[in-house]
Length: 99
Image: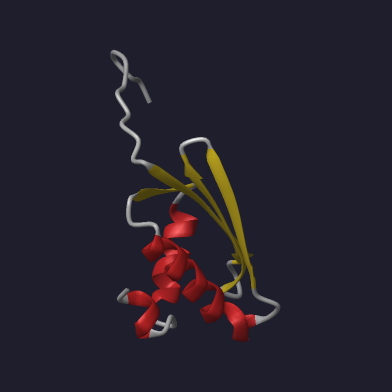
């Protein structure tokens, strides 16, 4: 990739840096890390699933965190994280998706 000139990036008041870990061949996501940065403040959230039956719960916790962060943007490492969220969205309780 080539960039001509100086890129301009405007950050929102809050940034959420998201990282999801899992076993892709099993479709099992066991760890979600979210670093929330507001100005000089940093807050780390870790959501852990002991087994596949707890996956929906950790994605619901992530949804609650993101809906409470109304002034932020989410940054992620690539398609893996986006695909994980898309895959798990149907398993998250409706109440966590609509806040």
